[in-house]
Amino acid sequence: MQAAAAASRATDMRRMIRAMLPALSLALVVAAIAYLNPRAISYFGFTLMLNLAIPIALATMAQMFVIAGNDLDLSIGPFVGFVCCITATLLHDTPGLGVLALLGCVGIYAALGALIHLRNLPSIVVTLGMSFVWQGATILLLPKPGGSAPQWLQDIMSVKTPFVPFPIVAAVIVAAIGYFGLMRTSYGAILRGAGGNPVALRRAGWSLLRAKMTLFALTGLFGVLSGMALVGITTSADANIGNGYTLLSIAGVILGGGEFTGGRVSPVGAVIGALTMAMAASPLLTFMHIPPDWQVAANGAILIIVLAARVLITRRDEAL
Amino acid sequence: MSQAVVALFRRPWIWSFVGALFVWLAAVAFTGGTGAGGMLTAALSLAVFTVIVGLGQMFVVTLGPGNVDLSLPANIGLASAVAMKTMGGDDHLIALGLCLAVGAGIGVGMVNYLLIRALRIPPIIATLSASFFIQSIDISYGRGLQIKPPDGFADFTNIQILGVPLLALIILVFTLGASVTLHRTIFGRSVSAIGQNIRAARLAGVRVDLVRFATYVLCGGLGGLDGALLAGYFHGANVDIGNEYLLASIAVVVIGGTSVAGGKANVPGVWGGALFLVLLLTMLNTFGVSAGVRLLLTGLIIVAVVTVAGGAKPERQ
Image (cartoon, rainbow over all chains, first blue to last red; front, side, top):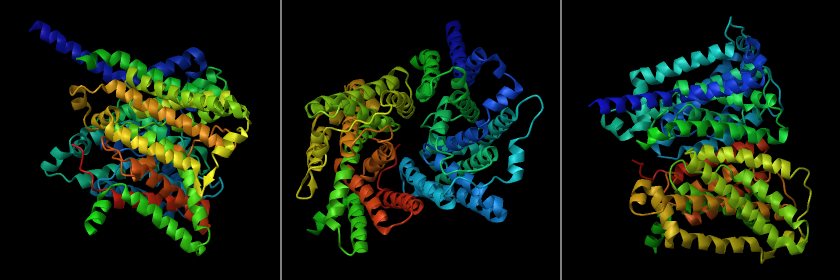
């Protein structure tokens, strides 16, 4: 009896450590930066290092919604780029038309969700095809880098919050919205169920079609927010601006403890994973004086080290 | 007769060939019939490179959900540099260069599976992280590399017999070999079994780890071969030479009727898918559309083809 209680306590403990892992990874990266350059750990330092963290966090959130439904969006990078271009051209010049176009994008995502569900298509291929569509549309809309982000957007993105840098505040808000929306509401549970056990969901009388469409629409919505945030920071757009976001967003979700199947995702983890990727991606490498040739490799190394640490901690948990 | 036709149209790979035929006819109709044969020859020469990596990717995808090799572009880039550096423009070193390029690819495959197995990382992330490393190695190894392929090798990749590229014929034979491997050998059956149900396969005595290892190594080796051949065909190595083969390798596998959920591979479909993609680009080039429209239409047509061809697959429980 006592042994069983002790064992269950030990399991709880490990489960807790597992849940804390994304945060630990982030702490690891911050600690490495602090060790290499103590001055980076300041209000100004974090504002600089996390400069692009908001769009990355939003894109990761977008990716998380499709992953929750057992799908994958390989077009989120080009889509973010497309949104950047709409924001820097249409939304700037003719706000009404711009808003319509952005809403249309969300609508297209919902339609994709419906198509994938009704025809039982592999989301990888459909979104792969869509990535060409977004790229093409971006080039047609903005053949040369340029355009200009609306002033109000630039103002929002350069807000100076007291004590805590704005990117961190924004990340907390995004994480909180995701957490309450997906983990705390009853329809959020249905959405996760679409990935966890679609058969049970259907038998319980829920519309899988509606769930898939909602998940994809949410991906579109957060993709739009990501693109708007990105162009608010860079102030002008170019066709390749969102290129790295597909892989960054997938890596962020996985680092945050999400899994590709079974509707197991964590919004808070995803945001933390995105912050880890944003920090690890460049500032850390500049401090380490890594030659440019090997910077890409260092990116991969950081990803591997963090995941390896995760395996070391959870190994015993999985053996149970 | 009509039954045979119906049976033919039930095959998942037929749609990729139908699609390829349609885009070819559209292109030929546009030019008024001129260059129809030349278009096919050109399409065959280019499709070969997609088929080689497509076959590797097909075996990997068949291993089950989440299995995909994202390191192919980096792998191809590195192998192209290895091949050109080893051959050094000397006809006598062609075989050695090919072997080392394939060897480099096999090494990449081994690293991929080591990461997947030892760190229990999902293959997408593992091969992605590996590709970052390979890219860096390639950048520093192949810096300023401007070695032309030996004449014998460059000629070999361009030989045509009655308008059919020799390379296409060789790879066709190789494809038949892949088909036999998939359907008639223990390895091929094991790959399908693992994709259908990894737990059942393990309980049935399939050596899951060994088979998965071999599959990633096979895909890596094919990537290496592709890199060497591409460098021969395009007269030189290049870090970016393999970039387009990430999307292309996955797209041809799926357009060709292989199930993304795993366990169901389709060898002829890889050819159909590759021809379709190449002919689609040829057609859009013939129409003389701008780069933006070309990308837009490519994407829409891929989605349309998948929509028409898909749907028959039962939902994975």
